[in-house]
Length: 210
Image (cartoon, rainbow, N blue to C red; front, top):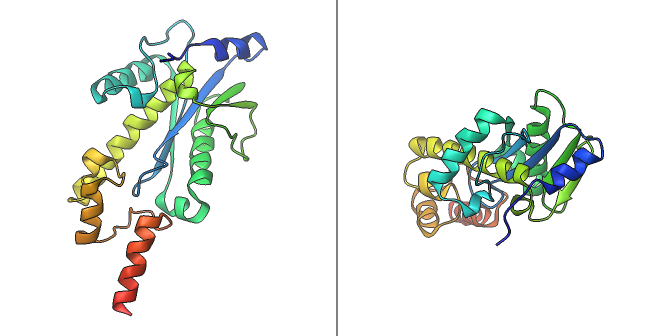
């Protein structure tokens, strides 16, 4: 198992980049809720121990590391809404959230490490795409943790207003209980209508009522 390190950031520093940001998003796959991105600029002298891809960490560990990251790093969190996801498509919406997160940093970074194989087309900062970046770069790993903790909190809050879908535990992903709730309770304003399972339910409903 690879553990993320600071090598990509160091290489950028050696090329003259003073501030290097890692960027990641969470929430491409769920059927409900926003897509959330985070941009993190770590202080090389104060990197929290144990940073890793958020999916490889327990919730308790993520929450603890999130607090450590917020205490020692520059962090910006941003979102793209369900409406934007449906209007743009999920890839473009996730890139929009990434650009918003970068724009939210107090000072623009000199270089950006983007998780994935694509650089957002609207990004004007020098950047490189890093495949499986959250397992390679501690800055991207930190961004993955911050984004995940922030989005989970949003989904827990939405679950209070729309009980029955299990968002407090499934974060909007299409779990068995979530799919059952969709059939029993219907589609909410926070469901992504462009996603096939939601689209298909709406099509069936309109066929029944027409």
